[in-house]
Length: 194
Image (tube, rainbow, N blue to C red; front, top):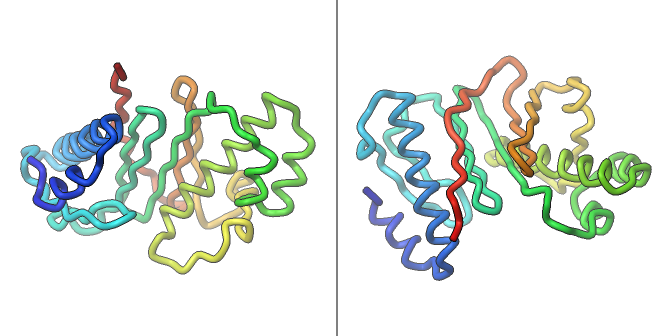
């Protein structure tokens, strides 16, 4: 079912787990769209883009989608308004305070300094996922630096954007969409890795 551009992208992906994740993500997208719009799996015309989601040329009008994956978990979401999703495996060990310098606002970093290990990890991923989801939502707009954007207004529900957060096993996810929009959460998939 892969389009020519999908096959070309797959051919340039050398790592076996990345190839598998790519194939599973395209299967998930096709399955979710077919289920939502009641079309056969082979309906969808994918056109790959470098460093971006594919264009699905025959997607119904006003259908927005986002895809995220982390450590084998793949999430796909659709909405009638711009939307972004990000998921992260929180079991990864990182230098949270150092990484925060790269994407957190000064106010977000001040709050981070107050936290110890478990709360620090939760807060770090909460901000990280929300910013990644926001970035995906606004990919058509000129975004400056992620440090200049504060997610705190989203968390406090004082924004034109709606933040939806949750957990799946050891993963944290964030969804950003327009305030008056509810996304259609259709599928996520966690394949068993050998």
